[in-house]
Image (cartoon, rainbow, N blue to C red; front, side, top):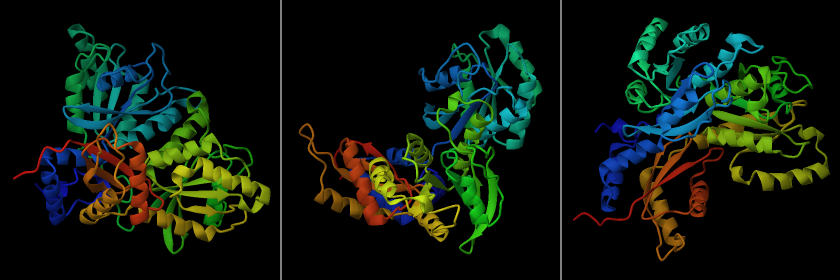
Length: 486
């Protein structure tokens, strides 16, 4: 086995070294795990490849997604436009796991087809490792489909063409006409009845990488990417202008002035950073129309392209559900996180008292995120932003050697064992860090570990090794001990 494969291809983590890997596998063998199980779990702990299912409205995307999943998850109705948000599910085919992104159809609204395709499709395609392009074989290729083909060619991602609604052999001639799209073989499928989906998924697995390529920070010495995100009118554009030292972005008291992310290279603290100023995220994206709806999609795209998210919060307003949801988006995306409390210059003592209570109550789950109190208008404490970002990125890329991690876990289990449940006391047998950006840990245990104990382990990991400014992903592989090898 090649050393480079020891972590199952987990992106930016760097593999386990030969000696470290041998030590780890010896631990596993002693506890009754075999090499194949370990390799599979390490691979599963890494980021899964992403498959985007795209197509114009009512071609059967959500029906196909349900077929891939083997269960009814995506909402399906016989009318276009039911799916508005991107929805992500985890799927498996032929023993390989991957993520499926179900996207809304491309609607020709007031923005025109080009703008709507750019908003919904470009994000879905850019964030994916491979694309299933769904076309209604009974209708044939439309102008909208042709426009999407151009987009797919520009993106350069592997594409599997799904000719849907081919319910029998007599309809296969309709699918053959889709060769004319020029993006490869049309796979005749009936998402509704399951016909042909297995062959199509085999083609998907061939097109999809074992693990996704790193999409950021690939160029040595390249600028790190920072997404400025937050509710509308919290001061994202004002912050970008202050950092840049000039008016690069339109600033207006009317919320929602920014429609498109604006990437700006800015020199700060002796380094060049790539800032992405994003349109404010609004509530209930699926009910939005026109520019605001697509701006929200672009915001999500900017977040997925970034390495660190700076979430701005207006200190003069109570911390809202929107604020916490936006923070959750950054954490769920696995990005390094900094929370910037903006408009601090206008904060009075009474509001400060209530703000601190709100932070303790509503943001307790992200106490690990660096905090900066700033004023984008006056420039107050701007010099603290870069050190906070650097701290978060350092935590995001921290790696703990396997030997040191297992010494820590041994001490932890000895001093704080898992509570006895049902006459049994599960314990952590050993573990490894399967990846970084963000840190991903796999723990191998003798029984089920309760959520509270997992949170305790994460808290102690942070106390021991840092990880400031970074979410931690932790999975537990439960296997009853089968006896030691002689």
